[in-house]
Image (cartoon, rainbow, N blue to C red; front, side, top):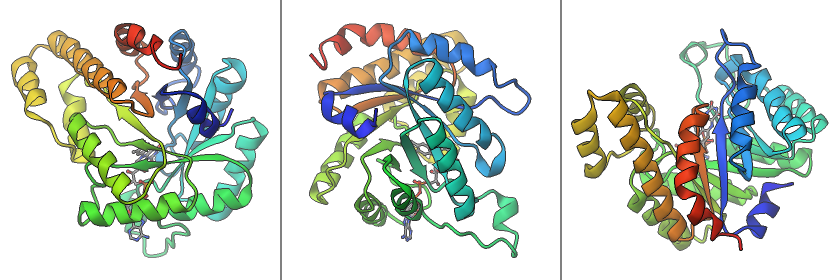
Length: 294
Ligand code: FAD
């Protein structure tokens, strides 16, 4: 099923993100993760796409498993900045041959080795160019990334929103947000989208933080705001891993319940391939979720 149809049918979708196992791990290690996630009845599962070849080929394979063996709707992430058009067309053909109908179309980030190589001439510069090519190739349901706090490379939020508008005008069925820890930022972002006449459904990306290393890394990559409530938890439980994990799960549940109450289009949980954590969250929102889509 195409995600665009699912979003029309359901009041709110609840979905998960997984990533292909790192190079030294067998690909089969993800199968148990998916099996456990299936029990939680997600509307769909997305599979990330590794930078510059690392685990890219596994994305199609895992998305196909999710769709064709586990019978869960799948979205394959696809990045373009390090690819040629011919390579992108090849991945689209592979996805089609596995009945995958949904793509999260992304620019990706240029690895330093490529950025510093004067002979590397990128064929893609922005996700909007990829979206144009996917549309030209056939009938896909296409999603894109968005950043409630602005993309880290953007000079300012307004510029970023203008580019986002252009991106949605290429024909996006839905947006998935970068993780955020402050729902107020998300609500302000929704208001700005309204003002700019961007009416593409927005799925909120929720990241359950469970350790301090993750939080530091995420802050580095995304530059996301850490609100006072979050900082208090961090300062208090920084040196108590078990307590921090519990607090992280409770924080994610709190964020999700607030978003569901506000009528968000969808919740996308960045599972970090941790079904145990995702299970805890889903258990806590189960009753609230049951009241949706009645
Ligand atoms: P774009 O939409 O192209 O935007 C990138 C930057 O360029 C922004 O600052 C934007 O304002 C600016 N811009 C856009 N168009 C123009 C223009 N015409 N002129 C000038 N500036 C412009 N990365 C991976 O490698 N693999 C993944 O699987 C993956 N999954 C992700 C999933 C989600 C939900 C999110 C939010 C991010 C994901 N990323 C992934 C990270 C993403 O690739 C990076 O954040 C990347 O830096 C931007 O990708 P984008 O598609 O948002 O780019």
